[in-house]
Length: 241
Image (tube, rainbow, N blue to C red; front, side):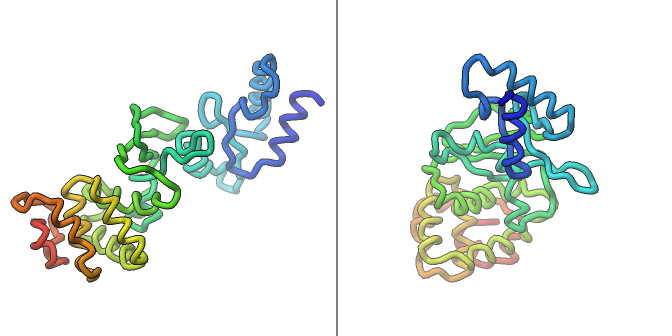
């Protein structure tokens, strides 16, 4: 089978929106140039689209044009290495999915233990947020919530008060076990994030679960989060002004 036919055969079996590189088709070292040429011919023919240098995807075609791949597909090589989870979507990438904003950003933020400078990939800017906790598939949803609390002032097209109201709803839907894990993970977050989490958890009355957070804070430090105190009287206890 010719390389072009082989590549077309494999692409036909890929789901729409799937991102791949030439390395996914190479079985022999000397095939690299032939594979790249074949892929570029398929781009010219409109069968596949180019995301960025060396990265392609199988587009989903709609009456309004080709849909871009899901953000997870765009950065999947940065989220997993050798089958191990090493990063997760966070920040602007998940504010919309958490119901914190209606805006969709072309900035994809990734939480990782080891960060690197931001870079461009197609129409997206990929940036990184330092995560001090061990990252597992199980704790990613909790880390995303904590990141939203940490960067609450940067959530676009909303207010701190509205974000807190939405976050309190999200926290109410967590199990006791998840809240316990959330508190443990929060201990590696900045003091302002711990104070705001403590305020929100006290509001939904989770029996002394916030004590580790409270003990971890400097009792004389104030945290400026306008509007929070008006909505949540518990903010006084946490020195939120």
